[in-house]
Image (cartoon, rainbow, N blue to C red; front, side, top):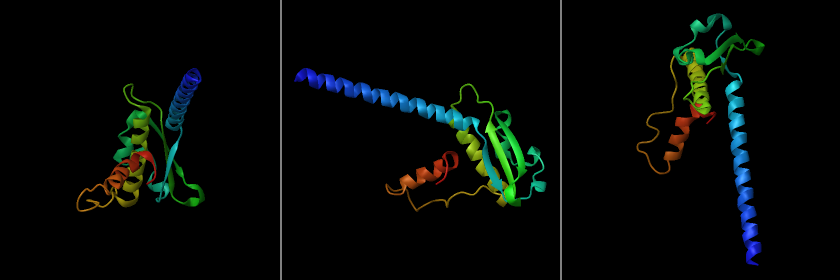
Length: 149
């Protein structure tokens, strides 16, 4: 009976380790795919106002040689699409970090072109930080680089 229990426990641990390794590999592949694909924003301005990359605000241009940028009219004459993708990542930088920088730069660029300023949630979000307000503060801090809030 003891041998069966030990064998079952060993198989359970080995199976769990296999699942963990596979999920880690899948996450890394997804990150590399996301880093190589185009990320696009639509700006509510005609393409004639954003003729080239020199007309773009500093957040996107600050990434320099790390990114490739394309500017084109949005479908249905609904403004301008600005597309960017990572083409080079610094040797000591994590692809996830570079991707966060790109996403944040695209959002900031969109806001600067449309409103003239980078919008942010109300500061301070409450009169003081409490245990219940902490999760929303963390979420709003990370939302620009990770995705939607």
